[in-house]
Image 1 (cartoon, rainbow, N blue to C red):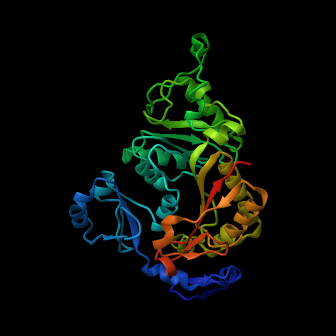
Image 2: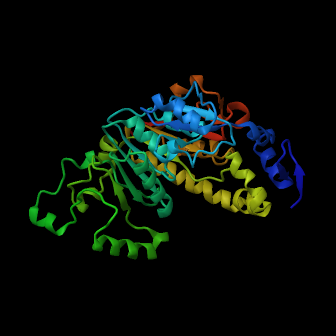
Image 3: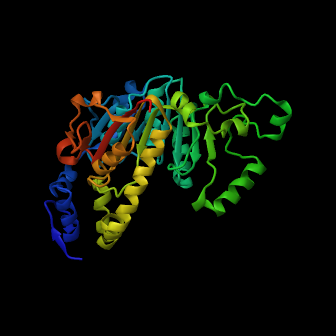
Amino acid sequence: MEVVAGASELLLPESFLEFLNQNDLDPSIYAASQSTPRYIRLKPGCKLELAEIEDELKCKLEEVCWLPDFYYLPPDVRIASTKAYQEGKIYGIDAASGAAVLALDVSPGDHVLDLCAAPGAKLCMILDLLGCSGSVTGVDVARHRLAASRTMLQKYAVGDQCRLFVADGTTFSLTPLRAQSNSKSCNTEEEEKNEIYNKWTPRRPWKERKRIAKASKTFSQIQEPDLIFYGKHSGVVGLSRRDVYRRVNDHEISQFGYDKVLVDAECTHDGSIKHIQKFEQWGWTTLQRRVLDAERTDDLTVLQLKLLINGFRLLKVGGSLVYSTCSLTVAQNEDVVERFLSEYASAKLLEIDAAKNWPCRQARVAKTLRFDPVTSSTSGLFVAKFTKFMA
């Protein structure tokens, strides 16, 4: 694979430059990444400690004027060894990712679904915005990544309203527990046969550990979501397994589904500029396989559409869904949106009200947005917001 100098210090292979050209992308975005700042989010309530955090980081934290509680700092500053990070006062999250969460317009009392929840930074931000009412359900197919999300929730003390399921986001079908409030098991004898959820602890009962071990052997064919965490106010405590795993029909979902759904779908990550830079160490042949391979991209667009469809299915009428990817390609963004809209008459794109002051540009489909290092001084991100009408 021939490697040539692009518009940056990063030597980009010709095949990747061709890929960028096919998607009307300017290679200079990879040059801009050299000066793209690092972003952190300050946990609400910690502003009084800002000066102390700056002293520890040995740099000034500049407030992101268009994104509350976000700050930027030089790209080479490391935060992992700092006391503020270890004590859960700050965490790293790109401003564009924060914008995708803000687009949801989360309000106290909402029931929110994060369908691709790992590694957990957006999940933490959703829970911060939610406050002390409502709930968040986080789903991810990768057990180890979702376990990292669980650790993050505990570190930042935001997990009380949350439950986490290892599950396939394209088939996950559990609704918020409010949909089951009128249908809890009331047969005491029946409940005795069911597992009743007490306060969550890291130490699981023997029967549950046995079930997990069995499920892990057939992990690629997950049949039932595996609840790996639930907070004390998530609605799970005191319920039976039957209540927590109860399925509801589409009519019930239209009334009692999720108020807000985030589908931050798996993608080729070509908009994550730092991710692309890593291929200098990993080897450009790896880039060919992970990003440029047409067959893999086709598989991903099928997956992305399935995730969007299922997230929308679990959304209640009048609710809002945000679809995002950190790819800059049309195939994984506008094409997925247009195909979805052509198949679902009850779906409609919404203007993102909060975006009026965002440093982003309109994408090829009206009302959808794109972030990139040149326009936004962030990583690349595509964002679209939908609502659901009664079919």
